[in-house]
Image (cartoon, rainbow, N blue to C red; front, side, top):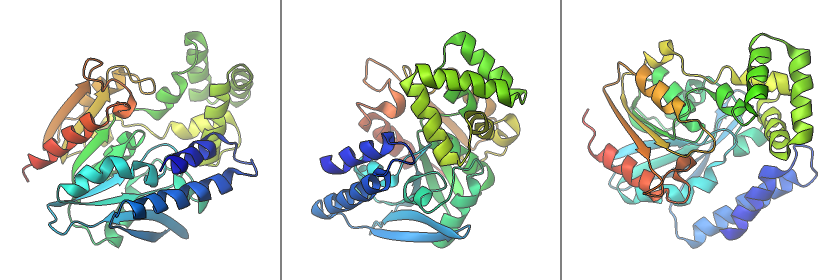
Length: 315
């Protein structure tokens, strides 16, 4: 497992055109599944046809199935890395299905780029597994993706944002210094491609993190310039009209010191959800060790919260 995660992190930080990038992914995949076999996990691997290619999925079938739990990752994740965190769900009577849509893991390697309309790959997965009702959990950027899917897909009867992401464009520009941040947002929003790219290229030269973030973003979205990448992220938002379509049970999670998603997105999204069957929110604190993004450092807090919430759901 340690080897798998080491290869995963190596792949994660290599440029798209690095000659070892695909090799690092293949080695990570191999060692994850070797670890799963050594752990005695009972699961199947399914490749689901979609948009002239295939989406990668794993299914952990429960013999005493309480419900079906559909899980997706976020911005550039792949599902094998989540398996240790989801075993509690499988051990508590839930059939767990993890899948990768566009921009994620093996599905990205198959040529499918990141997409905002996540209800499309989600619906295909539900069709493939013949699912009539399920709860969906979206991890990290999946907090946007799962909420978006649930707004359009009635077979999702409960949805969890683990953690919340209300606006991807605002999230991915929040790393910049204040003045630069407002300049980039203004020029991108107003279609100023040349000056946007000039500013963003300067930022890439000054910041290794900014350079990697834009490189990775262009890789998963299939865009050619930083401006085009940020324009694509404008689609990853939950405006009021989409939130008004949410009629299932909703659980929103956040960490009070999330380094990635600003806390105001948690409060904005909470206030936008008016028609859900039920709405539960939880902001994890530093005192309990859950203040980081997706409760990194104490993710069991979030897992327990989701389990308790699911066990109490009423149709």
